[in-house]
Image 1 (cartoon, rainbow, N blue to C red):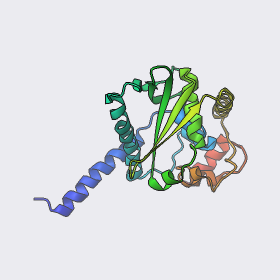
Image 2: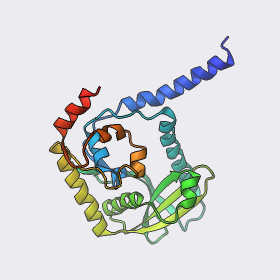
Image 3: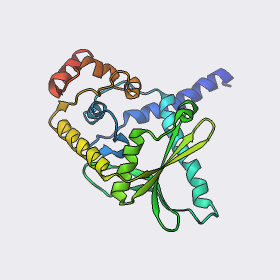
Image 4: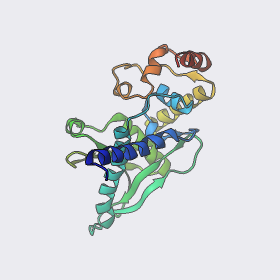
Length: 240
């Protein structure tokens, strides 16, 4: 009969390995995810090139799944509510197929007159309490949803995953902002195709993305400015 300690470690190993194995089986990336709008171009470049970065720990990977459960928690009352002033038109809906960007909106809702794109974001209590305005990268993402669905207004709904508090912000379609986002993604795709590593973000290394980036150590090895991928790839391989 297994002891409690052995069962504990066995279960932990099974659960951890489930997430760690899933991390290894990534498909080749050929287009941008909407969630990458506003993110570090160099980080995205490394993802496209299948660079081996620092593996995420199992608990971090579980947090991603936890975010999905937060979405389900929000959608359940919206779908089942008897308040017909607001109803869900569609949930988990893909944007129209395209070569540059792909993504899936949490929901499209209606107040009986107008449509809105709903985008749900979860975060810890410390960040949630300080949140007075929506995050810029979240605005970029919902702007793309508005553009592709041809809906002029959306709602960013933030969930405190520790205490389940909510904050919501109305976002209007900004066509000039969308144009800049798509132009920047087009430029980045050209750099990826031409094997030109983008410059570091200006706020490196203090930007929050740098602190949690899987490719931080690799980025540190490079230069501030653009680099030829083949030359930098050789430098990376020489250290492994």
